[in-house]
Amino acid sequence: MTTNLNALAQNISELVELEKNAKPISNLKELHERIATRNKIIALKDELASAIEDISASVYRLPRLPGPEYVEWADAVLAMNPVFLVLDTTGLDRNCDIIRFSIFDVNGCLWDSVVKPGRRMDPNTNYTGLDMTALEVAPSLKEVWSSVQQILRGRYVLSWGKEFVDDRLQENAEHYGLEPIKLIGACLQRKTSDYYSVYSIRLTTTCQKIGHDLPQISGAPMRALGQISILKAMSQGITDVQREAASTSDDDEDDHPF
Image (cartoon, rainbow, N blue to C red; front, side, top):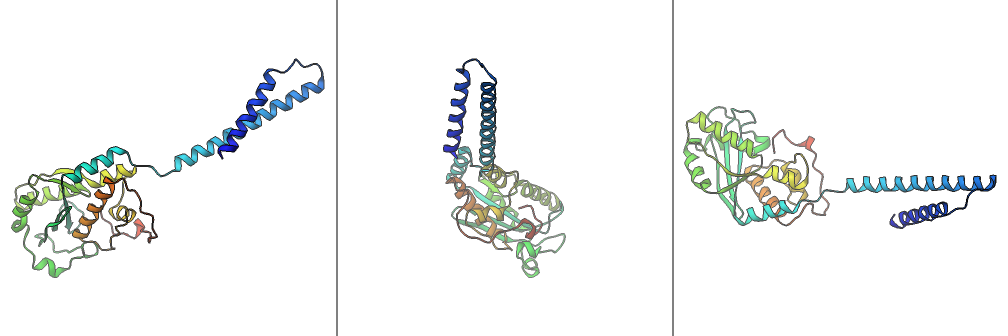
C-alpha cells in the first residue's frame, strides 16, 4: 500500500510539474493533450484521496491501546496490596440482602463468609452458586459485620461495580442498624473500561481476554480471583491473550451488574 501511494504521489507531482512548465497552447491538438493531462491529474488525485481514506478507516478500526497512565495506576495500586471486596446478594434491587462477603488480597483469601439474609431467603443460585442450605446455617449480617469492618479498615479497596457494592453496604447497614462501612478505593470495572477505551465491560469478558476464564456460575471467591488477575494484567499492559477460547456472549449471561 505504501509503495502504491508513493507511486501515485510521484506521478501526480511529475504531471503537475509538466503542466506548470508547459508552453502556451498553439493549436487544438495541444489543447486536447493538455486537457487529457489535467483529467489524468484529477483522476490520480481522486485515487490517492480514496486510498488515504481507506487507510484512515483501517487506522480507526485498530484495537485501541491502553494509555500508560492506566498501566501505571494498576502497578501502583498492586504495590499497595489492595483488598478486593466482592458481594453476593439476593438480587439487584435496592432492598436486596448481602448473602456473602469475599475479601481477598493479592496473596489470597482474607475473609469469606456466607450470610443468612433477614428479609427474603433467596440464594440467587444461578449467579452465586449458593443453595438454600448454605443460607439457613449461615451467621447473620450483624454477626459478621464487625469482622468485615476490621478487615477493611485502613485498606485500599477495589470492587467490580463499586457503586453497587457501596449502595448495598449502606442500605444493609441502615436496615439492620449497623455502623456504616465507608470504602476508600476505586471501581475496578470503571478503571478497566478506561483501560480498554470502552464505555462498559463485563467481568467475564475481561477475564476471558486475559486468559482467566470464569465458569458460567461464579460465586464471589471466583470473581475476586478474576479481579486480581485483571489488575495484574493491567499492571503489565496486557490486553488480550492470544489463544483459542470459547466466546462468551453477553446474551448468555445472567442479568447482573458485573
